[in-house]
Image 1: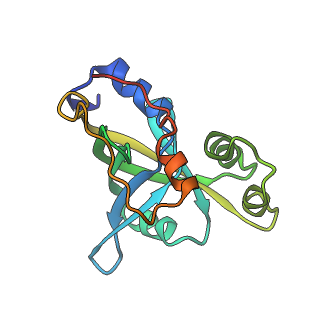
Image 2: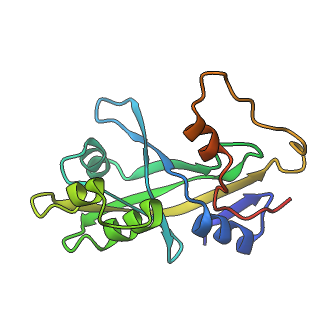
Length: 174
């Protein structure tokens, strides 16, 4: 049983994880004894967080040595909300690139872009990282941040301004 604390009930937590289209930030142990953090696309499936990455990526070798991870999935713009936690990660081949295809569809909306074609290349060996959460904590600053607008710098280009105001694909729980 996963230990869950914070603002949301189980349904709200699962809805957020299923609908938020933001990267998961994963912290793990580096073989030299230090810590390592990176961001990956994810999907929430059967109570786990699944990511895909190339077989030669550093995180794969790190997780083969130590499965302990911490993670955070949170919105990037106000009002801030999200889930953080810890658990264990396993790595396994994604020979048919099933998880990768699902992630490309989730984040890019399709699998025909130049990026998708590069990642789906037959020469690329893909790995699925599956995180089984052991502890989760949710937070939602919607009420606290009511009326707060994101500040934009004059250097922000028009496309970035439009992107910042698109829905973040997460439910409102305030």
